[in-house]
Length: 98
Image (cartoon, rainbow, N blue to C red):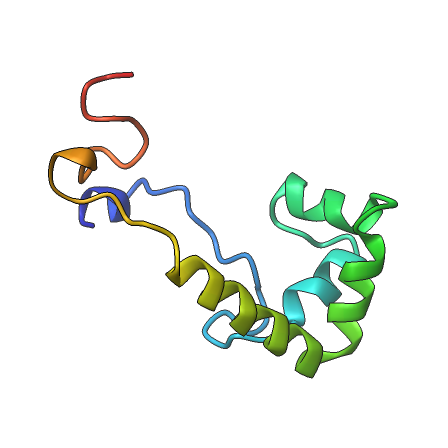
């Protein structure tokens, strides 16, 4: 954890208005062309995802419902443990240098 939070850590909050709240504000920012990451901003301009961004931006209850569904789904994934996984010494690269 400390390695990933060094003084020169380039991270930024993806949601500049309500950074510590799980809400739909980031989708409104994407609609206003203020997305932090290019890939997020692309969600607002792509024909296949623009409707999802619009729905989430205008309906916090829908966003929260889908967020919960996604978290539950992620909880069912098999986590690598023991020798199958690794805790990275540098969060940006695999430990063996791959």
